[in-house]
Amino acid sequence: MKKKTKYNLETLILLSPYLILFAIFGIFPIAYSFFMSFTNYTGLNPHYDLIGLSNYIKAFNDEIFLIALKNTFIFVVGTIPFTTIFSLLLAILINSKLLPVKNLFKAGFFLPSVISMVVISTIWMYLYSANGFFNNMLTLLGFKSLGTSWLASTKTALISIMIMDIWAAIGYYTILFLAGLQSIPNEVYEAASIDGATKTQTFFSITLPLLKPTMFFIISLNTIRSFQIFAEIFTMTEGGPSNSTQTVVHYLYETSFRQFDMGYASAIAYILMAIIMIFTVIQKHLLRSDI
Image (cartoon, rainbow, N blue to C red; front, side):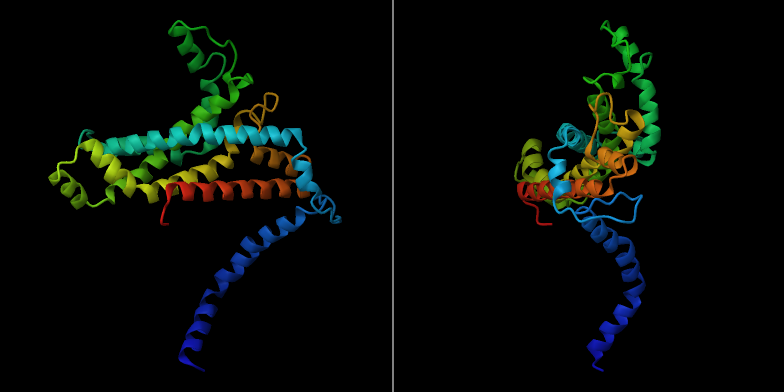
């Protein structure tokens, strides 16, 4: 046996436990759910029939799914720019010499990231309640209180969840931006300073271009996470009132585990996956990342 062949065989044997587990718990569920998206499988009955593309066609004629898709797009478009900009500004502030006790600020901003989203959502439910913090603040500032929970109105429910999500996500992305900023060599800034570049020129000509890989990673990660929003909706509104906060993943959950239409739920999952992939490719093209 040749030395290279023996080396490859030994490598394969050593990796085989991981490869077997990955095949069982990673590849098989993906392939099986894709197959199920072409069936009328319910999860309660082992028998099912192949129905072709019916589940995919059904999705685009399903009024609730289209509402969930619209709400999900609003959530993604309405949160990602704010999360990205605020995170970048906070990272720049922490990275500068203006802020004392930087570790305290880093810990404070990162704290929501290590707390369960269910806990955060429950706390914010009280803040949004009829007698909660936000209604009391409106009254204190001379504005008219909503008189009811912010989550009980179709006009304010979704935006209330978006505000909470922006607040909760900023700390995590701030730390990622901070890592990106600190990876930029000081020699580059020193060279720009010698050439007489202003701080504004340095930021737009050096900092932002060198942060593109980090920014691409953060926006892609945030996009995937935002498209998959579930815990906040499940805890705070369960898609209500009147489906005004219904999102794709929450509707997928209801379809699969409450209506037991596993085939249709699988089709919804693959439609969402296709949308996320399209968004990721567009983002990579726009940011022209070399990653």
